[in-house]
Image (cartoon, rainbow over all chains, first blue to last red; front, side, top):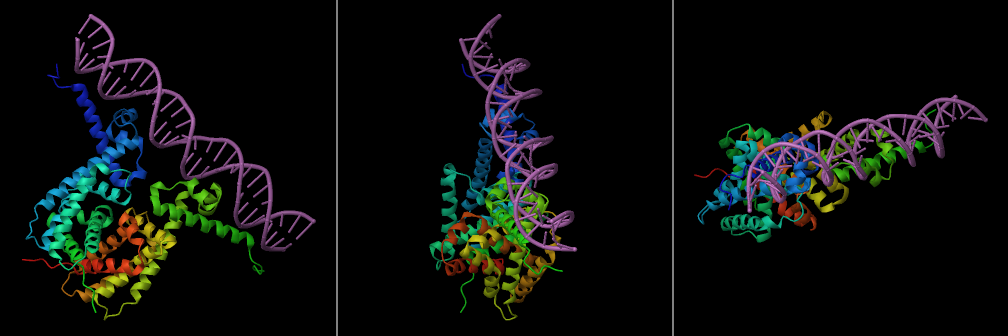
Length: 210
Length: 210
DNA sequence: ACAAAAGTCAAGCGGCTGTTTGAGTTTCTT
DNA sequence: AAGAAACTCAAACAGCCGCTTGACTTTTGT
């Protein structure tokens, strides 16, 4: 018969796995993939070094699992934010929705910010073969591009793609650089008031003069 | 008497130092400070491991020297580009001057791009005590802010500071992320055509609607 | 009741890390 | 010519790295 009682042993194992992933994300957000250290992760997670090999095969396996966890949370938030857009949404609405997950993470701090920092670091040094999330990434890119081009009819596709990625890079920079830490000290409204106009301005660009 | 003949011995030492700094910058740009490895640097520079201790005291000393070298080159280029601005310069001129060093580095590749990548990485994970360059940094910030506020009279100082730093972050992101590598494949005019309007747009922002 | 399975743990493995040492060579000074 | 100074080098150092092992406890299945 199946498990009519709670699998206490397996649950404990899952708790260890979660603690390892959380500790890995924290270190990943702080120092990047090169700065990752097995013993620091296990100490921070309150686990034995062998637990990593047992649950994830290797430190790289744990690292990949943590990154995938972060990417999934990020992409879900991004997709949900973009879902609020309608064909009538203006450029500022697009920018606000596009920046919403980062603004929220900066204001909230904690795990949410750790996730964004990790995603940003992955955006700089991409790991091999994250094909599993490629579909979701395509969706966010497609949604943003459509909303953007609806508000900028005169723009070409390469320009729209570049501006989307540049705006994403700007937001990622806020997560990583000291400026983001200064920003995060204030309330969410203040962050949004500063960030959204800049993202919207980057979207719209400045028509070449002369 | 002073050295009437060339100090061959000292010159050789200087060549070793330069080679070590160059090799360090390359690895620094590629993998960041955490990914730095003594033997990879020395091998790449064609030097002995002891040369690092001899010339720089430690690997950290070499790393600091390389970062300082990169920061100096970056700041000089930035200051020179901003020097071309006049009180009559429009927002696009400011953006073009502000982005010029990065555009040039992306188009040129090689050591110039390595320098920009290193500077960008330092912008994310700042080392302790870079007081020696603080003055030059202040100068670039002051110049940019003045030119910016001359073109955006309605903007407050915190907003101007944020937009300057956000635009700098956007450019740094181009140096580090894959999008920059794709960009770098094209000619300089194409890079500038894409980048400058976005930087200018980020400077100008989008006035809050409604 | 009794294996089998799941998870944890201390100890130890080879390998790579940054650094030091002392001898060696070459150049400069006097 | 003789010594000082500048520089290079192979070898070794302790320490940390990721990973494995084998014994151990606890839970699950029959």
